[in-house]
Amino acid sequence: MKKFLFILIYIIYSFGVDIGMTQLQTDENISITTNEKTFGFNLFKGKFSNINQYRFNPNYIINVGDNISITFWGAYNNEIKVTVDNQGNIFIPQVGVIHVIGIKASQLNIKIQQAVKKVFKSNVNVYANILNYQPISVFVSGSVNNPGLYQGLSSDSIVQFLDKAKGINLQDGSFRFIYIKRDGKTIKNIDLYNFLLNGNLKLFQFKNGDIIFVDSLKYYVYVKGDVKRAYRFELKQNVTTLSQIIKFAIPNENVTNVLVYHNTQHKLITKKLSLNDKNYKIYSGDEINFMSDHNAKEITINLEGEIAGTHTLVLQKGTSLKQLLSLITYSPLANKNGVQLYRKSIAILQKQLLDSQLKDLESRVLSASSITTGGASIRKEEAQMILQFIKRAKQIKPKGRVVLNKDSNLSNVILEEGDTIYIPKKSSIITIQGEVKIPGAQTYVKNYTLKDYINSVGGYTSRADKSHILIIKPNGKVITYNDDEFFKKSVIISKGDSILVLGKPNSENLQITKDITQILYQIAVSAGVVLRLF
Image 1 (cartoon, rainbow, N blue to C red):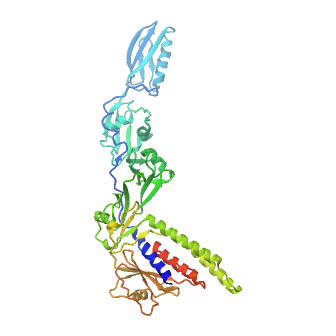
Image 2 (cartoon, rainbow, N blue to C red):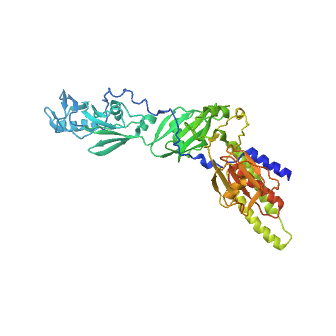
């Protein structure tokens, strides 16, 4: 029995208890703070606006005002320059009027050649070339820095007109949702990422009075870390995959892992991935940090609870908990004496220990036997209930809480990657859970005993194990209490304490009873759950 109690005490003080983890979701608007530049920020630096584009575009549509050079040689030699008039025609001496508006630049030479051959039957060759494209005025509006009406050529590209408007507003402008409107209708959608990422920019012929509208930024992610492109990237929709982000960011060769920070319901969730998790969903607003575990000199720590300021810190490896706490800005309601530390490696250890105990219990239940027929029937029914209990217990996920006693030297507590520090609120509430008639919370009353608080929630249930009561302090320290002892030790209930009354296993097999009791302790300690046996 002494050995058994020693094991229980070791578990309690090694793994801590989490009663208040549901409080980790706060009402604060947790935000991811970044200083990243916007991808494409340097596109508009005045390098396009003063340059007119005269390059030949075979798909250019001849329009009013275009200047055309025509050269004749052979039986007839001449060189003339003509302008497309308001009716869409050009006039060639000795040939006459030719209607050219609306035809493509690639067809212009053929059109003029056909007209010339009607007059000069043979030995006359023609070469036509567009000298100056039609000057036009285009409106640029939406999320640009200087909306207005800008002059250019119909052959100019969209980046030239956007540059004339001093570029896209980097705070709220979209590089991927740009629309060209004509006569009240959208005639073309532009995604500048094709230009930024691949160098592709299809030519488009503007007309006088066209409108370029830059929509507002809708979807985006932040990328940082060991990558060639650490920017804010714009998404086409609310969700994408890690594969797409990798194409955007181009991680360096030494990158092995990816940290994804996701805001959901005012709570920051951190997910660690490998580069092979390419189908993992990335949502708008996420922050993606590419890093190498082998060469990492920094760790990421999550802060929860009563924190005023950032809820994610990147610290140097080797930083102690004491050093971290000196960097925190607490809210006025923070309980600085109730600091709680949750560690992933401890959670894994707790889960391994719990699974091992459950496996051993399952083996004992399945191998148990009874001498009488009646006893066998009872044992079978009991075994089924215990197996159901084991099934539910396997679903439990330990929290990985590390108990921090008031005498602990926090300088010796070295932080690890992914640690979560939780700062609880100052509280005057006493929580009573487990095998009591009306589980709930009561206000703290000075000089109230444990028995007083138990009575305030209706007293014990018939399943209560009065010899196994846990009092959990705000800092995670666990005190055990036996209410069945004749000479009871006094226990002080303080503000913010939680009282857990465990259930009493009912089994004829004493070893199974001990195993179940130990598992109930382990679940309560590691996951903050009071699991009912049957």
